[in-house]
Image 1: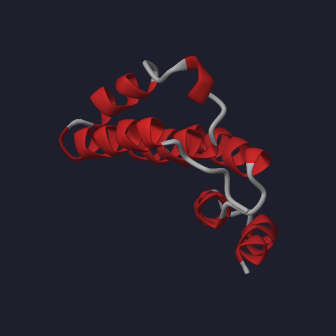
Image 2 (image 1 turned 135 degrees about the horizontal axis):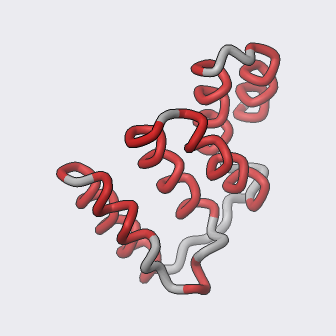
Length: 103
């Protein structure tokens, strides 16, 4: 099962996502202010990867999507995003492997 999100983290991530609509760099900086107890949460790494993809490209996003699925192997959105990274980088065997994890 996917790692549970406590309500405070859920609110924090909603704030980050809202800020990202207007200022992705500021949203990325806000993620750096996350409570230390949240630093390894898969959803936080997923959002960081998503923001970094938009700012710096798929290579910058990849380690964060990898970390998200390593922390929660059932995290379908993380596997899907990692598959998209591999697709953008032309690594088709990894695309298939990641997308099969989603199924």
